[in-house]
Length: 118
Image 1 (cartoon, rainbow, N blue to C red):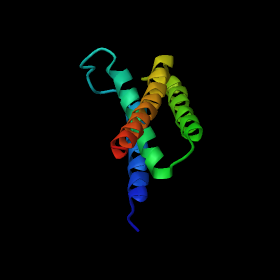
Image 2: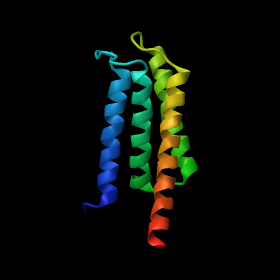
Image 3: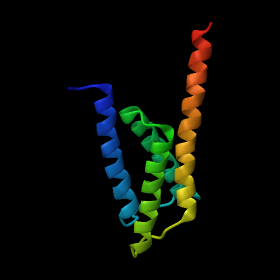
Image 4: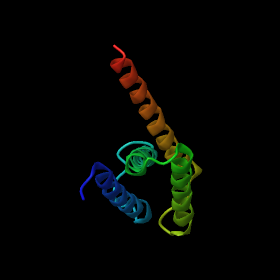
């Protein structure tokens, strides 16, 4: 059955696969601006948090712990790849993406509350 929740689940699976491919493959794209990698990490984890939230509606701490584990796992695997390197700054960017999702989500909820009370 096609539901919004199932669409979010499918999108989450596709996003995890694409993200994993990008972070584990040999980089063949140019860095068009400084810290492009960090922006990519932040954006990827913001999207992953969004999709996971709407796919499963988990408690915030479970979603944060799951995505944090994925972020750390990525860096551990990258440390073993000869053409990649691990970076604490990448993990920080991942965590920032997760936090930014919750900040934006909270802001939108507050905005909707204000709007409905008018």
